[in-house]
Length: 278
Figure 1 (tube, rainbow, N blue to C red):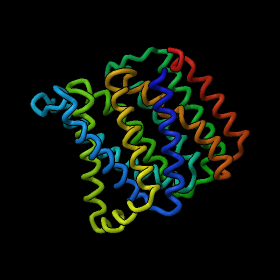
Figure 2 (spheres, rainbow, N blue to C red):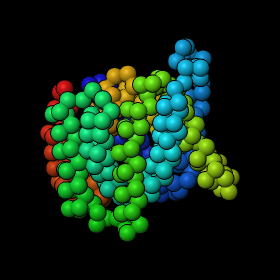
Figure 3 (tube, helix red, strand yellow):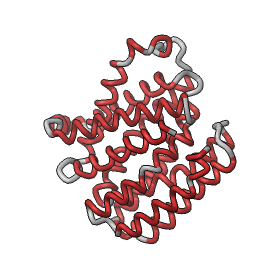
Figure 4 (cartoon, one colour):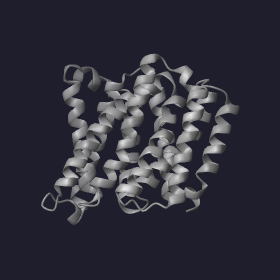
């Protein structure tokens, strides 16, 4: 429960940092900053990780899944930031839809330790997210924004699946080491012609805030997925930050109405009770 609350609070802080940042920064700079921060922190942890920090016992499955997760992180960060530029609320609906896709796959095919009622709760959250998205938030997005939203949703659904496949054969640390280095490599290759502009953006305090928050939250998420809650439940607590973000967005950025956002938040937490209490 405490880990779930920590994940939720970190994601809320990160979301509002990104929302502020997108007013002056592009998604390329944010993607580079976030992945760079985590790469530095992950390598700095190597001396204290003991037996977990070893390439000798690295499973090929962890290597492949970690590289896939790195690609998902890169594209998810980029598309998610582009959606958040148009609507923070819309960007956060995708998590509910994504977890409703990932949880059944993990439970049925990949042996995730999640009960049937918890899977149904995840599916219910997805249905709620779809209903509210098409009822209002979809209208806030341009045609390009809707395409980005669909892409970001599918990518976010793939992340817990990759976690479920990649963490058990080795350990969470080697998995995140591979995935984050892959994400950073994708960023550098994709934005090699604008590295100077991205590096110049690091002078802004908001870049440090976004990068640090992303790094800390991703560490907590992967550690929890590998050692405490499992990928599906960790992903659910990740998306339960959305109602809080949406209510804040209504007051701070005039996105939808506080009443509508509050209604969504209450319904989301009611549907998620089997997960929160379980």
